[in-house]
Image (cartoon, rainbow, N blue to C red; front, side, top):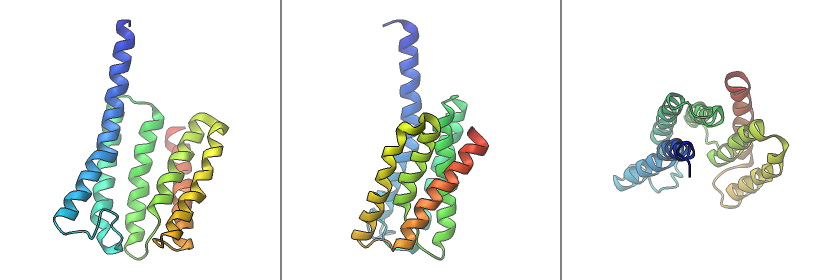
Length: 168
């Protein structure tokens, strides 16, 4: 392996590690900390009133991730995803004060939009995952149809607008 390839691999591992740590590991640990402290009922956080702290922590973590990835000069796609996660999470947190939104449908639809901007129509078949995730939220009685639809609308529209204006 040539030295440049090794450096490129190291860089990709660093960028991936930063993204995974701040968007998955840190947030998962925080939710389990809240559960251990008795501040949330379960790792699912089914009770709307208990969701605010995890949402705010998530938004802060995503924003720190965005700033670090920007500093690392990561691809605009991954920077854009973290920026969108930040703002979409803040919007959902705001709405959650009055009403519950399906975070799962937002979480599947937003990244698919970003991937479609990056890779084009090859991503379109994966949009079939959105109704599957939405149906699971309905089957498990975690959300109403309106809450699922609003989650998709936030994921699709907010991500598309942000990618178009800030990262395209």
